[in-house]
Image 1: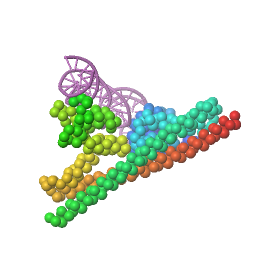
Image 2: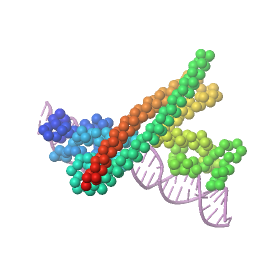
Image 3: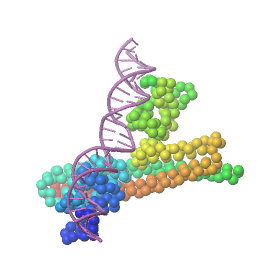
Image 4: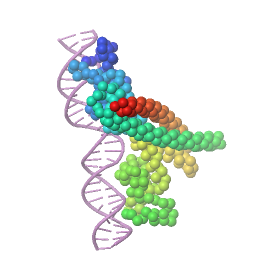
Length: 160
Length: 160
DNA sequence: AGGGTGATTGACGTGAACGTCAACGTACGA
DNA sequence: TCGTACGTTGACGTTCACGTCAATCACCCT
């Protein structure tokens, strides 16, 4: 498809779809990463040109942001991220109603599953927050010790 | 050396040296990891038997804890961790006095280097703390939405 | 009509952080 | 004395998360 279409992406009905290169550079990753995430079942572009070029929606961009957040901030591997997103997706389907084919029992199970996952992740984040606070305290303590040393060196400098 | 010596490690002068297997299992890593860290210049056992078995001191254990903290909490790679520990080590040497061979200018440079590194790391930790707080907020918001869905499902259950 | 740009699908390569295996040595308890 | 447990040094294997390259295709501009 090439460039130039960027400004004309918003045609009539489709709400702003973007090419892979644009999405990648905006997110600070390579196009290879996006293809790999698709291959891993993490992020499927919501559109495609007749030639086969991937088209990403704003929702896709948001999903990518979530993936990178889980990867960089929490340090999860891609399989873990896939499971998390999968659970969230299934819950989103629940909300979307029109899920008449799913039994009430199954729906309650899905909701419980998502809530369990959410609770576990909250616990992990809180734990990590505690560790990070401790680490920050260590750093500040080190800093004050460093200042003492620097002061000592200054005194030596004056004496000599 | 084998087992059994564990309790007799504290002989006369050396203050409690432990075998690699004990250290590894206590830290939740394998012995391979400890050997790899030595190979990478991250953690050198402070003792060794005449046959060649590694002996780790309590200070070594503390250093290992630092390494795993930097690896797991901050997500740094081993090279980055090596540089951090190296800078801290040099500063510790400064404090230990008896560094008459080092010029005042060099000592001041080392102190400044350590303080710069400390400041950069504090910034990174604070940044990560911010991201984690944001992530936790997302999770809590999700949780309340999930509760709504669960409540809705309960109402349906009552209706049916 | 031709060139530049950005996309596609394979397929193979790579670096980090270990895992695993072979061959060997040694101390301890029965 | 012998088996078991634990240690040693190579050396090769493995997984993850991409990087890189080749061959091809389709727009866009001049």
